[in-house]
Image (cartoon, rainbow, N blue to C red; front, side, top):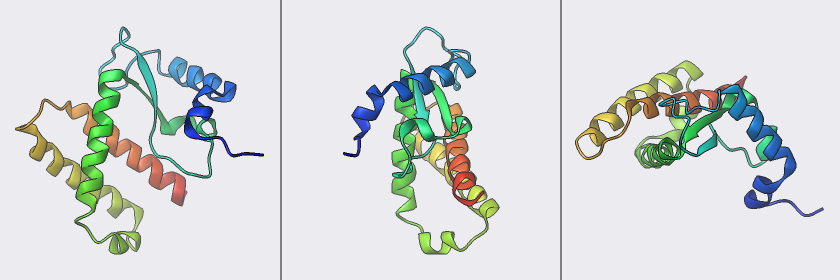
Length: 141
């Protein structure tokens, strides 16, 4: 059987069911701002190529309005760029709590760096950190 691509999974009934479940669990409101009027997106805190979109634990799926969903992806891109400057091999050998502390500090640095050039919502930093924490917990139990 052919493996489904991302867009085929988005159209799959199992994803549609999971998406509605997550929206319902979050009260059909944005986790960052509480908005109930703008289009809502279900955001995966991380991706695992071995999982289908609907196979993730509910606590790793987040509900964001279109605006905050775009912003969290911008933050994730900044984080990926910032990570390029760090020795990831060293990070792989450190305990999970140190990973989380590293990202708290990195997130603070990113917020300071972007504060003067954009109107980023500080809620997004917390959401991004939660996404990373979800990823680490899923990978390491």
